[in-house]
Image 1 (tube, one colour):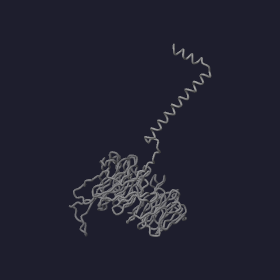
Image 2: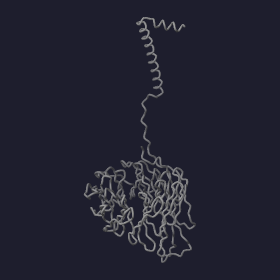
Image 3: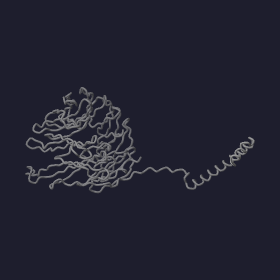
Image 4: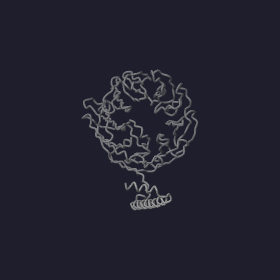
Length: 475
């Protein structure tokens, strides 16, 4: 009842009296709020909370540190050597390939050198990327010729190239579950597998057949291992790396021929004779197929095989803008890929001893002791640096996992360029050539590669994996 009377009394007061009281209380409230804000601000400033936040220093790149190592046991008591191919990293799994050479003492020596004949075993080890624990392994007679991982399936080709009484040791194409190593299918070849590659769900196998020694291209369904077709490219020759489109597979041979074969049924679409052996890679761009023979680069119409142009230079790269890049002596050339007209020329003033590498829209090459980076649009030099002695012979894209027994001594990975010289691994900022760090390896270590932010070395039967997080270019 008392509260009610006070409320009624308040309401019955004159309007000007109420207004004065409201202004008085509002003023008091504002003073209280201002005081509170000042006290809180004083506390925050004294504690440093309102001081300007210093900029976060970028994480400086650090040399790699040990992560794990893996040692392979010899498969036989008569093993005389074990060599490692480039590790391949895919979906959290590291694939190591060991080439093991062994002898059979009971076999008679080879005359006239009186050499004990040797044989080889190829083994793939699948390891956990984080800790190096072995998940599975596969051992095959002969050499591992190809390894790739697509959609959770590991494809491996292995072949025993020993030739005796008209017959090769035989080859196999395996399809395995990438996680467990369980076999999905195997395709056997009575001959020597030279190479293989997968495109659009088809495994293409290049091999020499036993007895006839004819050279074949064979197409195998990648899902079930069934043969789709075979094409005979003639007596005992070797193949260039192929190119593909929806209609055909394009490749050359050491006999100086270049072929287009139907991807559907293996029938020959066209066959062109060129000067010299066709080796190296083939490139298909905008309806034109490019390849090189011993001393000439060719551009052919992919539909008809008609020669569009040729240039007396070997080793090329095709850029996204339809520009073809070549090296010859001291010079790098850029040509219009459609008609062969020169766009620009860069002179290094000394012989270019490496291949050209076009990675992340930059051209890299080496002279005797200098590594140079060019702008592919106009040939302007972006930077150059001394390579501390042995120049890299080839620069690879570390984001592209590839299997090879030939270890690269220069790799670009995550914005950094790595090259190995004199037992030291050098890391450069690929954008400007400035040094990030140097890492001196143990004296007898061999550099394998940098792949997926991991550095790999080997010695004898052991592969060493070094940390990846500190390897890449700082963000």
